[in-house]
Length: 431
Image 1 (cartoon, rainbow, N blue to C red):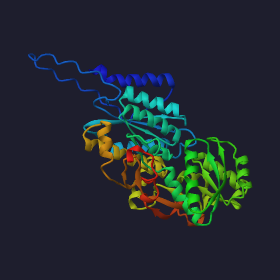
Image 2 (tube, one colour; image 1 turned 180 degrees about the vertical axis):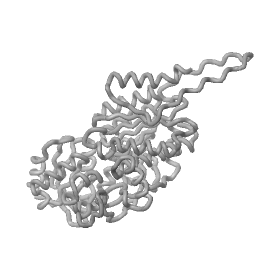
Image 3 (cartoon, rainbow, N blue to C red; image 1 turned 45 degrees about the vertical axis):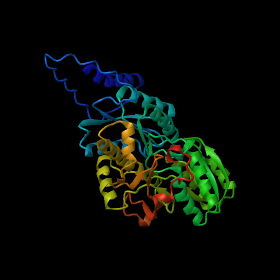
C-alpha cells in the first residue's frame, strides 16, 4: 500500500530529472499513514482493484497549474498566478475533506503540445484532480480536450477564446475570468459609440487573436461601423513596423489591437514611435494592469479597455490586493485575482460535494453562485462563469496618486450583456 501511494511522486521526480522542468508542490505531502492491522481471526480482505486514469488517487487533492512562466505572458499570470493559487490553499487551511491540497506547476512555453502532454501525465501518474491552464488559447483548447478525455475538472482564466464554451465546449471546462466575446462587446462597442466607426486590426496569429478579431468585427458591424482590413502578426513578434504601416495606409480611424501581453506593449510602443497614434485611435482589446505599468501613463493615457477586475474598485478588492502585494511586491492583474477566486471556488465545491469526483464537483460548481472580492456570478451549463465586466480607461499622469493608481472605471457592464447568449451559442450542453 505504501509503495502505491508513493508511486506518483516517484514518477513525477523521474520526469523532472529527464526534462529539466521544476514542479513544486505548495506544501510537502505528509507521509501516508500505516494501515490498521486486521483482527487475527478476520479473513484476508480481497485485493483492491488497480486505479485507472479516470479515478483520482485516494487521499490527495492535486491541482496542476500550467501557465507561461517565462515568456511574453508571464507578467499577466505566471508565477504571480501560482502565488494566488497558493494563497487560496492556505486560506482553506491547506486541506479539504481532511486531505492535503498540493499544486504542481510547469511553464507551457506557449506550446499546446507541452501543456497537453503534461496535463495527461499529471492525471495519469500524479492523480491530478483539477487542471489550470491559461494565458494562451491554443494551450487551453488542447488541455481542455485532455481534461474531457480523462474526466477532470479544467479551469482557465488567461486564455480568452470564446470557443472554450461555445463550439468546443466540454462538460469539464470552466472559463472563469473573461472571453473574447465579453472583450469585444465591452471595448469594441465603447469605441464605436465614441466615434470610432472604421477599424483595422493588428491580430496575434493564433486562436486567441483570430477569435478576438472575429468577435470584435461582429460588434463593430452591428453598431454600424466597418472593418477596412486586418494583418496577422506572429506571436511574440520582434518588429511591428510593416504591420503598422499597413494599418496606417488603410485610412481606418481605429487600430484594433487583437493581441495581448508583450505583443500589446511592443505594438503600442511602435505605434507611438511611428506617430500612428496621431492619425488612428488605439483600441486595446485585451490590456492588463501590467501593460499600462510597463508603458507608463504618458504613453497610455486615455486608452479604453475592458477588464474583469481592478484592484482599486472597492474596499474588498483593495484588501485582497494589499495581501497579494505583500507577497509579490506588485498589485495583482485581473487574471491573478481570478486564479485565487477560481481555486477557492473549486475547493469549496469539492468540500460541498464531499468528493473529488469530477462529475459531482462540476454539478456543484454549476449549482452554487459565486460571491467574493473578485466577482459575483454563476457558472452556466456551457462552463462560462458569467459576471460583470469593467470598462476602464488609463489615467492621465496628473490624475495618478501612486505607482499602481493607473486606471479609472468608466462603467460596470452587467454580465448578461457581454457574454455569448443562449441564442448565439453552439454548445450542445446549453441547448
